[in-house]
Length: 79
Image 1 (cartoon, rainbow, N blue to C red):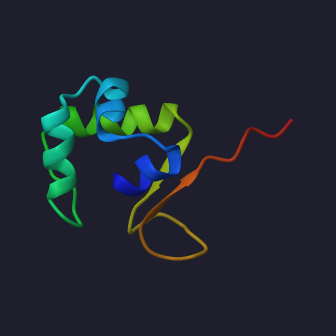
Image 2 (image 1 turned 90 degrees about the horizontal axis):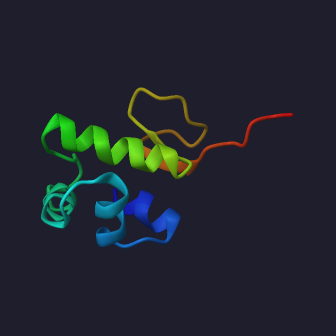
């Protein structure tokens, strides 16, 4: 989540506002180290907010040229 926020240039408070999740919840998610933990509903809200902002989250099973987990901006639609 930190990497996604850095990519967007936003702080924890802004992500909380974008996702409708409380600031303490965002702080706990980021403090969990490596693997983000939280209630499924809260995680879904945060992921949806990041997706709406144009960020793709790359999981262990996702295809990435660099390999591994990470974040990237979504490619704009062709056309």
